[in-house]
Every structure is written in structure tokens, then in C-alpha cells.
Length: 413
Image: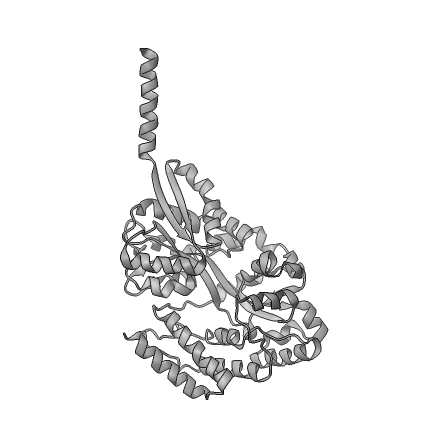
């Protein structure tokens, strides 16, 4: 009888333990899903009775699913991953928790994270709705072998946009390679130059379009037009198969993007080009960001307390942030995590260059800009007008006026 009693006590203990086990979900996209999974080993030591389900979808599919989920309040994850390009739309939806409020009180930790990224996750009406985990300080990756062949120096690329274009002419003449994949890539950098505090890329602090009034748009269109007119862009879109091949074959000499591109080039885009690439600052030393990842908690999530604890582990733990950078090229948003020895190590893929210190310096200079729910709409319209300038010779002033008018009309719906 005593053995039977002990047996039933054991069964009851196991049943109670199982009953107390909690499950939370994290919705993510590659390679954030792998970062979360790698972080769970340490986090679950403190939370042994919590099962974490990571629901992974491809980048576009993930954000489409999260848009539907927020709109219908069905199938909500406890932790939602958001990429910068979708942040404005999601942040203004009203469906995300204000993490400045009790019990979260993110404000006490705000100074620990890169200020411009924190500003991107904050809205006037809804507070701090997203916490940055990785950032994308802008960088210019270039083929060192093509520049050497063309007798072009790194300083020639960075001194000014005029010098950048002149360098492209030399590279094209001496090596046959294009300067950039698409003239649109240059426009994307120039329009992010000199944005006033409190403004966004396309809208002012009142949410009004600045496309036809800000000189940065006119200059961006002019520089892009010059590049196209001189045959310096390959006319291929980023992330297309043709783009990937151009990076592998060296038919494009420069790619401006976030610092994370270095890892992509090494690991899957162009692993056969080891040692041929270098990284430097953008032309005219423009300090801007390119992408970044954020975590949020839906207002109607079930396990908010555990979700917040996991988000803090992912964003405020220096060891975790450094691991994400070393293994997954996720440049840390946590300032303390930017001081590790890893930053001073040479990058073999970049010819032994100590590129990470330059990326860190750029990150420290980026000014905060606001995000708006219609940013992606404005980007689409501006790109369409630029295409008309590049392919149909539409006057730039008219293109910008038309873009402004269409953005204002569609944004006011």
C-alpha cells in the first residue's frame, strides 16, 4: 500500500507540473527565428515550465500574416517580430502594447539602446510599441579588385556624389562593370540625407508629404538620372536572381545597404568572392540606417508577462546580443553589446578589414527619424515616378509634384 501511495503521489506531481506548463508563441521570419531559438537555451533555464513555439514564415508572408492577425485579433502571437519597412504601418495600427506603461516601463531601459532605433519604434499616439533588437547602419560594399583594375581609390567613391559618378565612369571603362545594380539604390540614400528632427523620410512632423518641397528628393532624382544617362547602372532589382548573379560575377562594383549585407555576401549571396569585397562609409559620409528588427506585444496577446520577459532577454542581454551578431550578423541595438572584442577582429571575407568598428561609428551618428503608416505607400509612389524619369525622361519637378499629390490623396483615405 505504501508503494502504491508513493506511486500516486509521483503521478500527481507530474500531472501538476504538466498542468502548470505554459506555452507562448513568437512569430518571426528568417533569420530572426534562428536567433530566437538560439536564445531559448539560456532563457528557459529561468523559465523551465515555459514552452516557446517559434512560428516562422518567409519575410513577406510573415508580415502579411501579422497584418491580418492584428486586423482580426485572431491567431495573435505573444511576441511579434517586425522589420523596419513595416514598422510604420504596424506601429500606427493601435494594436500593439505601449511598452512605456506599467508593467513594462521600457523608459528606464531606453538609454541602453541605440537612440535612433528607439525613436523608430515610438509613435506620438501609441507610445513605445516596438523595441529594436538589431540595426542596419548604412555601408557601401565595393569590389576591391575592380577598383584596383580601374585605378579608383576608396576615397573617390566617398568624397561626393559627383566623385562617385566619376569613379563609376572609370570602372565601366576599365573593367566593363557597372557602378550600381540600379539607379534607384542611390536615390534611396540621398533622400535619407539631412532629415529634420521629428520628420520621417516622406512626411513632416504633421504627417504631410514633403516630396515636392524637400531639396533632398530633387537631388536624389538628379543623381539617379545622371547614373542612368551615363549607363552606370545594370537596371536590375535588389534581391532578384540577376542581382545575385551580378554580385557573384563582379558585373556590379558597388552595393550600398545595411552592414548586415557583408554576412549575406559571405554566407549565401557570393561566397565565391571571399577577400574581394571591402566596406566603407556612404558617399559624403551620409549616416543612415538600412532596415532593422523590432519586437512587439499585441494588445490582445495572452501571455504578456512572459512575452515581455523574453523580449528583455533578446534585447537587453549583452551576451545574447553579441551571440546574435557573431552567429547571425545581427548588428546589436544594445549599446553595451557593441564593445566586445569581436568588433575589433579582422573580417576575412572583407580582406582582413576591421569593418565592424566603422559600422559602429556610423551607427552612433545616425539621427532619429519618425516612421509613418503610409511610408511604404509613399515609397512605392516615389519609385514609380522615378522610373518614369529614368525610362521616359519625365521632368523631375513634375514627377515630384505628381508623387506628392498622389501620396497626399491616398494617405488621406
